[in-house]
Length: 285
Ligand SMILES: CC(C)(COP(=O)(O)OP(=O)(O)OC[C@H]1O[C@@H](n2cnc3c(N)ncnc32)[C@H](O)[C@@H]1OP(=O)(O)O)[C@@H](O)C(=O)NCCC(=O)NCCS
Image 1: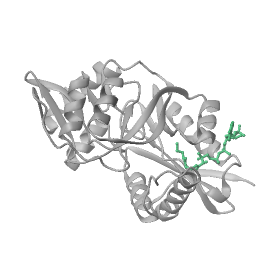
Image 2 (image 1 turned 60 degrees about the vertical axis):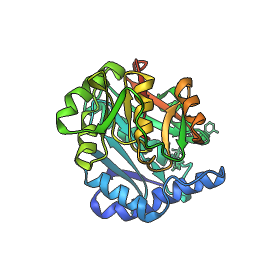
Image 3 (image 1 turned 135 degrees about the horizontal axis):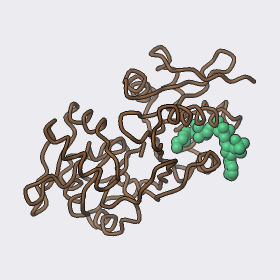
Image 4 (image 1 turned 120 degrees about the vertical axis):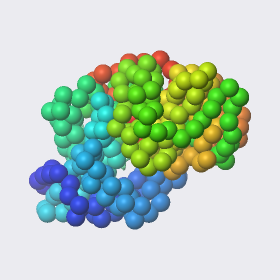
């Protein structure tokens, strides 16, 4: 059957939302894990936001005039972030996912992005193999953590709301840790009121767009990252993504009653530097 790929439009949001919810629910149920999206309505809201946001590139796959899947590329920063990618459970395992992935990889190339990244569910063998054969390299095991917020400030560290005046300092921390900036995300999070910075010895030592599934946090040290996690009023979505090899912070989280929800994998194509500091990737990277 012929599959065509085209840019997503606002009218596609409801069908994309239905498929996003159904595809994630089907694979999670097979493995007895909680759902990423609680309902088709929530997934439609996310699809609608991504399609309408000028910083995201959205595409749908069509078969016989019907939408059978969608994929998105976050183009707000220097490194692109892939996802969510989903294929209607009735149309899976027939090459549609590969076509949707090839299209966003090509998009990244055409925009000369130095790299693109994604996060993969650890229990999903098919997506791990698909991404690997496309050229994505496994970089980091991630632990999704959830629990009661600590809602506290750690001694020596002050966590406060971020303002537009903090963007340069946040970008500088990101450059030191990752080697590139994520300015689009921090600007969006400041506008939404969720971004926070951590100050140590009188200067910005890290920031978080939020502590949660769709958010990223970066700090020069593990203590700065712990301060950002400790001050969070909640852990949004299914949980926050912690690099499991960060033994110090993983042990610290478990020692404060947090629970491991599931394992995920950070995968990258193109530019990658081993991070020189502490961080929590978002579900995109
Ligand atoms: C992930 C997803 C988008 C893939 O779409 P799809 O259309 O089913 O995938 P495709 O048929 O294009 O590709 C699957 C590939 O994995 C390979 N594969 C599947 N299981 C495998 C296994 N156990 N070992 C090795 N290869 C495997 C298939 O052979 C195929 O490779 P090929 O293209 O070389 O033939 C789809 O399964 C989905 O929507 N899943 C639920 C939501 C989700 O998890 N999204 C991704 C979040 S990271």
